[in-house]
Image 1 (cartoon, helix red, strand yellow):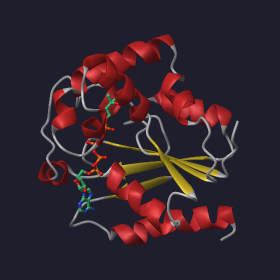
Image 2 (tube, helix red, strand yellow):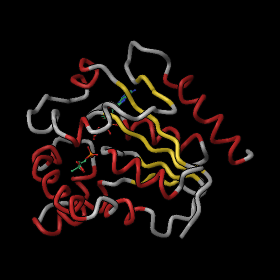
Image 3 (cartoon, rainbow, N blue to C red):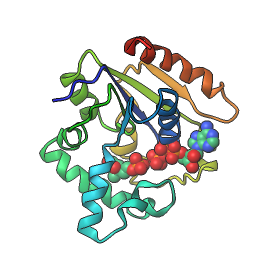
Length: 191
Ligand SMILES: Nc1ncnc2c1ncn2[C@@H]1O[C@H](COP(=O)(O)OP(=O)(O)OP(=O)(O)O)[C@@H](O)[C@H]1O
Ligand SMILES: C[C@@](O)(CCOP(=O)(O)O)CC(=O)O
């Protein structure tokens, strides 16, 4: 098994900016040779797309396409997770040689527990927070059955995050907040 120096587990609500923020961090660390962005939803979407004849690439982007299938993808993924909570975690950590791993979409307590159990010393948690107004400006529409379900609310309580990043246009400067995280990563990499 590969042994990363640091794992940043990101979580946050829909359209809080998880992909946006994690991609900035990856760039600041020198790109994909140093830092891998791993998505628990990657293998889930890939397999779901195959089984349902969908466009996997479009399920990955930030457009409205994936939203048409979100509720059913959640149900499909939960079937797998109920049988084996570490199912997607194990898939994404295979053959990842980079020293820093960013998991951009932790959603459930079992995701956090899986990483903490296997990589206790390396794992840190980061919450991306954004107001409902900001999320709406980015295309979020409240949907019952999704926004009140475990997929969105599973980490609302019970995790003491190492960092919370506010990602609102009228909030604290994003760069300054990210610099605090980056300092720790660089120290750990001895950069
Ligand atoms: N600080 C920001 N400044 C400008 N645009 C932003 C910012 N944060 C997020 N966005 C934009 O908002 C949209 C949603 O962000 P992103 O895809 O990163 O959210 P997410 O939390 O990964 O969402 P989801 O889980 O719903 O896929 C994207 O188009 C992204 O570029
Ligand atoms: C089905 C699901 O993986 C979709 C995640 O999509 P995204 O991270 O919002 O792009 C959510 C879940 O696993 O509950």
